[in-house]
Length: 171
Image (cartoon, rainbow, N blue to C red; front, side, top):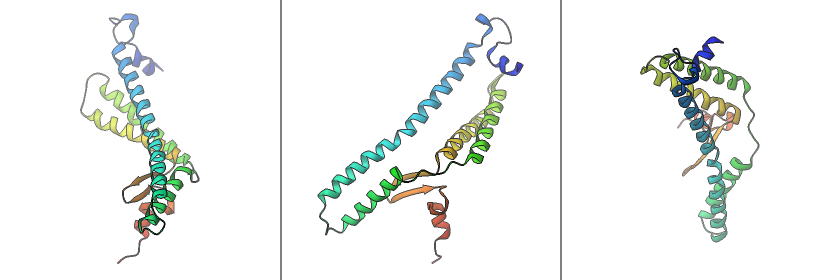
Protein backbone atom coordinates (compact mmCIF):
# COMPACT_ATOMS: atom_id res chain seq x y z
CA UNK A 1 0.00 0.00 0.00
CA UNK A 2 2.87 2.36 0.76
CA UNK A 3 4.29 1.78 -2.74
CA UNK A 4 1.02 2.95 -4.26
CA UNK A 5 0.99 6.06 -2.09
CA UNK A 6 4.63 6.70 -2.92
CA UNK A 7 3.62 6.91 -6.58
CA UNK A 8 1.73 10.13 -5.99
CA UNK A 9 3.45 11.52 -2.93
CA UNK A 10 6.80 13.22 -3.40
CA UNK A 11 9.76 11.96 -1.39
CA UNK A 12 10.35 15.47 -0.07
CA UNK A 13 7.71 17.94 0.90
CA UNK A 14 8.89 20.64 -1.54
CA UNK A 15 5.88 19.98 -3.81
CA UNK A 16 2.56 21.69 -2.99
CA UNK A 17 0.34 19.38 -0.97
CA UNK A 18 3.07 16.70 -1.17
CA UNK A 19 1.90 15.47 -4.60
CA UNK A 20 4.32 14.91 -7.47
CA UNK A 21 2.24 16.71 -10.10
CA UNK A 22 4.69 15.94 -12.87
CA UNK A 23 4.13 12.22 -12.39
CA UNK A 24 0.36 12.67 -12.08
CA UNK A 25 0.22 14.63 -15.36
CA UNK A 26 2.36 12.02 -17.13
CA UNK A 27 0.06 9.25 -15.94
CA UNK A 28 -3.00 11.25 -17.01
CA UNK A 29 -1.43 11.85 -20.42
CA UNK A 30 -0.80 8.13 -20.83
CA UNK A 31 -4.38 7.25 -19.88
CA UNK A 32 -5.87 9.85 -22.24
CA UNK A 33 -3.60 8.68 -25.08
CA UNK A 34 -4.53 5.04 -24.53
CA UNK A 35 -8.24 5.93 -24.48
CA UNK A 36 -8.03 7.98 -27.68
CA UNK A 37 -6.03 5.25 -29.42
CA UNK A 38 -8.66 2.69 -28.49
CA UNK A 39 -11.42 4.93 -29.87
CA UNK A 40 -9.54 5.48 -33.13
CA UNK A 41 -9.04 1.74 -33.59
CA UNK A 42 -12.69 1.08 -32.74
CA UNK A 43 -13.82 3.58 -35.39
CA UNK A 44 -11.95 1.76 -38.15
CA UNK A 45 -15.03 -0.41 -38.65
CA UNK A 46 -17.06 2.62 -39.70
CA UNK A 47 -14.78 2.91 -42.75
CA UNK A 48 -15.56 -0.70 -43.57
CA UNK A 49 -19.27 0.11 -43.67
CA UNK A 50 -18.59 3.04 -45.99
CA UNK A 51 -16.57 0.76 -48.26
CA UNK A 52 -19.43 -1.76 -48.20
CA UNK A 53 -21.88 0.94 -49.27
CA UNK A 54 -19.55 1.97 -52.10
CA UNK A 55 -19.17 -1.65 -53.22
CA UNK A 56 -22.96 -2.08 -53.25
CA UNK A 57 -23.32 1.00 -55.44
CA UNK A 58 -20.64 -0.32 -57.80
CA UNK A 59 -22.42 -3.69 -57.95
CA UNK A 60 -25.62 -1.94 -59.06
CA UNK A 61 -23.73 -0.21 -61.89
CA UNK A 62 -22.01 -3.35 -63.20
CA UNK A 63 -23.85 -5.57 -65.65
CA UNK A 64 -24.52 -9.11 -64.35
CA UNK A 65 -22.69 -10.57 -67.38
CA UNK A 66 -19.52 -8.60 -66.65
CA UNK A 67 -16.61 -10.83 -65.46
CA UNK A 68 -15.92 -8.44 -62.56
CA UNK A 69 -19.49 -8.76 -61.26
CA UNK A 70 -18.72 -11.97 -59.34
CA UNK A 71 -15.53 -10.48 -57.89
CA UNK A 72 -17.38 -7.47 -56.50
CA UNK A 73 -20.21 -9.70 -55.26
CA UNK A 74 -17.71 -11.95 -53.47
CA UNK A 75 -16.01 -8.92 -51.88
CA UNK A 76 -19.39 -7.68 -50.65
CA UNK A 77 -20.25 -11.04 -49.08
CA UNK A 78 -16.83 -11.11 -47.36
CA UNK A 79 -17.40 -7.62 -45.94
CA UNK A 80 -20.89 -8.60 -44.77
CA UNK A 81 -19.48 -11.67 -43.04
CA UNK A 82 -16.84 -9.58 -41.27
CA UNK A 83 -19.23 -6.80 -40.23
CA UNK A 84 -22.37 -8.76 -39.42
CA UNK A 85 -21.24 -12.37 -39.04
CA UNK A 86 -21.37 -14.24 -35.75
CA UNK A 87 -19.24 -12.69 -33.05
CA UNK A 88 -16.19 -14.58 -31.93
CA UNK A 89 -15.98 -16.21 -28.56
CA UNK A 90 -13.98 -14.44 -25.92
CA UNK A 91 -10.87 -16.15 -24.67
CA UNK A 92 -10.92 -15.36 -20.96
CA UNK A 93 -7.80 -17.34 -20.09
CA UNK A 94 -5.72 -15.46 -22.65
CA UNK A 95 -7.26 -12.16 -21.53
CA UNK A 96 -6.29 -12.79 -17.91
CA UNK A 97 -2.77 -13.84 -18.93
CA UNK A 98 -2.21 -10.73 -21.07
CA UNK A 99 -3.71 -8.46 -18.40
CA UNK A 100 -1.28 -9.82 -15.81
CA UNK A 101 1.52 -9.50 -18.40
CA UNK A 102 0.68 -5.84 -19.08
CA UNK A 103 0.30 -4.99 -15.41
CA UNK A 104 3.63 -6.63 -14.56
CA UNK A 105 5.54 -4.84 -17.29
CA UNK A 106 3.81 -1.53 -16.52
CA UNK A 107 4.89 -1.86 -12.89
CA UNK A 108 8.41 -2.79 -13.95
CA UNK A 109 8.51 0.25 -16.25
CA UNK A 110 7.35 2.45 -13.38
CA UNK A 111 10.07 1.08 -11.14
CA UNK A 112 12.70 1.66 -13.83
CA UNK A 113 11.79 5.32 -14.40
CA UNK A 114 10.94 6.12 -10.81
CA UNK A 115 14.27 7.84 -10.08
CA UNK A 116 15.68 8.56 -13.53
CA UNK A 117 15.17 7.56 -17.15
CA UNK A 118 16.71 4.35 -18.42
CA UNK A 119 16.58 2.97 -21.94
CA UNK A 120 15.29 -0.37 -20.63
CA UNK A 121 12.03 1.35 -19.78
CA UNK A 122 11.28 1.68 -23.51
CA UNK A 123 11.36 -2.11 -23.87
CA UNK A 124 9.28 -2.79 -20.77
CA UNK A 125 6.84 -0.02 -21.69
CA UNK A 126 6.44 -1.49 -25.16
CA UNK A 127 5.80 -4.95 -23.67
CA UNK A 128 3.20 -3.43 -21.34
CA UNK A 129 1.40 -1.78 -24.27
CA UNK A 130 1.61 -5.04 -26.21
CA UNK A 131 -0.07 -6.80 -23.28
CA UNK A 132 -2.90 -4.25 -23.30
CA UNK A 133 -3.41 -4.79 -27.03
CA UNK A 134 -3.38 -8.57 -26.67
CA UNK A 135 -5.88 -8.34 -23.80
CA UNK A 136 -8.24 -6.35 -26.03
CA UNK A 137 -7.63 -8.83 -28.84
CA UNK A 138 -8.51 -11.77 -26.58
CA UNK A 139 -11.72 -10.08 -25.48
CA UNK A 140 -12.77 -8.93 -28.97
CA UNK A 141 -12.02 -12.13 -30.86
CA UNK A 142 -9.98 -12.68 -33.99
CA UNK A 143 -8.45 -9.81 -35.89
CA UNK A 144 -10.11 -9.41 -39.30
CA UNK A 145 -9.48 -6.77 -41.91
CA UNK A 146 -9.81 -6.13 -45.61
CA UNK A 147 -6.84 -5.94 -47.98
CA UNK A 148 -6.76 -5.28 -51.70
CA UNK A 149 -6.40 -9.05 -52.11
CA UNK A 150 -9.42 -10.02 -50.00
CA UNK A 151 -10.25 -10.39 -46.33
CA UNK A 152 -7.63 -11.52 -43.85
CA UNK A 153 -8.43 -13.10 -40.49
CA UNK A 154 -5.60 -13.68 -38.04
CA UNK A 155 -5.79 -15.83 -34.91
CA UNK A 156 -9.32 -16.89 -35.79
CA UNK A 157 -9.28 -20.65 -35.41
CA UNK A 158 -9.61 -23.17 -38.25
CA UNK A 159 -10.83 -20.59 -40.78
CA UNK A 160 -8.08 -18.05 -40.18
CA UNK A 161 -5.68 -17.05 -42.91
CA UNK A 162 -2.73 -18.44 -40.95
CA UNK A 163 -4.48 -21.79 -40.57
CA UNK A 164 -5.34 -21.84 -44.29
CA UNK A 165 -1.68 -21.25 -45.12
CA UNK A 166 -0.60 -24.03 -42.79
CA UNK A 167 -3.16 -26.49 -44.19
CA UNK A 168 -2.63 -25.49 -47.84
CA UNK A 169 -1.70 -28.38 -50.12
CA UNK A 170 2.00 -28.51 -50.92
CA UNK A 171 2.78 -27.90 -54.59
